[in-house]
Amino acid sequence: MNTEKPLSTADLARAAEAPRPEQRVKRDPPLDQVDIRGAQEAPAPAGNSHTRLFGDRDAADLRKKWSDIQTGFVDEPRKAVENADALVADVMKRLAEGFTAERSGLEKQWDRGDTVTTEDLRVALQRYRSFFDRLLAA
Image (tube, rainbow, N blue to C red; front, side, top):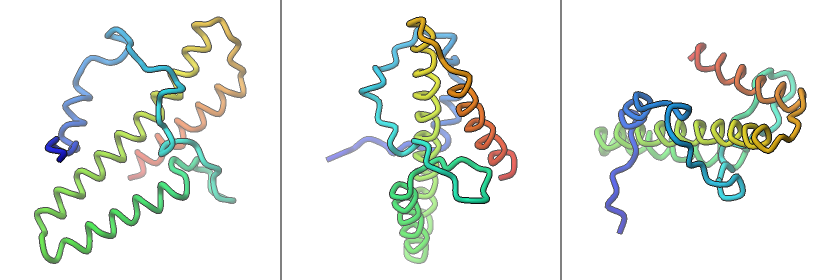
């Protein structure tokens, strides 16, 4: 039985106050051991300038979880709000892990002396810009 307390948005806020990765010793797992399936880039729909942050299956799963939370509000409003907070925290964590893995991959290429193409960097920057614009618009 899992007795671990679910992650909350307050936990994420406290973690954001911790030293930044460049201020502490890096202990990232190898990229082949990082699961970023939920945060992998998917093609943007036609006519949409935003990069999709989750694949279709992951997005559908998250929407289903949200729908279940909303449905549960009628019987247990407090629990629904707690579950909503945990779901939002999970999504934020998955997004951060995806961006961290992407950055880590680029840094490892640089550390090995590999050439990171301007195209690789352009795609990464576009992804950051798209996400940043949506955060400010929220």
